[in-house]
Length: 98
Image: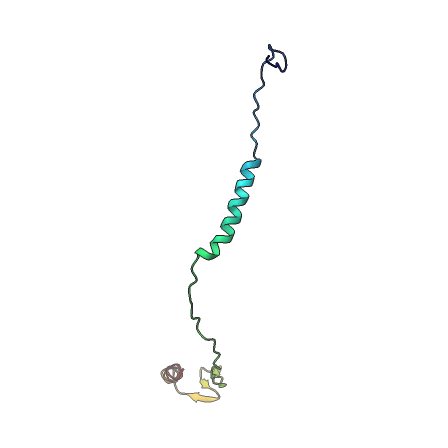
């Protein structure tokens, strides 16, 4: 006494769709496991960061004004400079002090 379902001459249709529900379930479980275990696995590194400090720079408020007259005379803050060598010497002194 066999039970027949459907006609014998009907061909069985092949199901071409893939059921992705179990795949999604497994991926969600793995994601949860990784999210829980990663903070435990990653070691912490102790760092000593440098201390912050601000130091005021001392700047000289002195402005140097070099001017040249029409006739070619050179002045350093209204003081006459005899020639260009003397001017270069004074500039070298200022640069050495800075």
